[in-house]
Length: 241
Ligand SMILES: Nc1ncnc2c1ncn2[C@@H]1O[C@H](COP(=O)(O)OP(=O)(O)OP(=O)(O)O)[C@@H](O)[C@H]1O
Image (tube, rainbow, N blue to C red):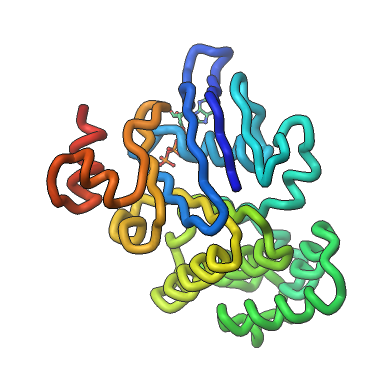
């Protein structure tokens, strides 16, 4: 579970408020979509969740542990796939995966099983012994996804995960996200693809200018909008104000 309380973050010595007092909870078993226009504060929030940025105010807890006070513990429970995956180009795919498994203390049997499962899902078996520098952009994304899944995290955080993936990989990733939630995990991801969010998310939050302006299930968002509307229309209406 991911619990965010009164979270704020400013840049440029406090003059630019990127995230402004936001609160929400993504529960176990939920796919939680984080939407918002460019510059709304999505990546800043995500970077605070995964410990790459420290908040100015507020708290974040993952499976009941505070990300500042119990930083290492929460990192071990979390996997993160950034919007522009940077991979160690000088490693072979398999070396990178074993490195990730080592970082997360994944045992021999589990790592073997998970590596084989996700390499097959993402059709990377033939490339796994090649240097990552020879991979296409999409293959790099898929090796990063595989590396992120090796630890079977309680919280799976993805920033714009569908961009650059081919239709089959994108479909497979959505299936994996659902499977993780069925196993009691939490998936939190940002996206601009509203059709995907509408289809797969159990809950959605819309952020605009650093503030959460709508939050809930698709049914709740529709109810608040007062009519039967698509997520796209609701998004356009609430972010226009
Ligand atoms: N390192 C930084 N220094 C100063 N301002 C920043 C920095 N990073 C982000 N910002 C500002 O903070 C605000 C939120 O940016 P953020 O990257 O979190 O938005 P986003 O919702 O992820 O946008 P996008 O959809 O375009 O990726 C923007 O106004 C941005 O200009």
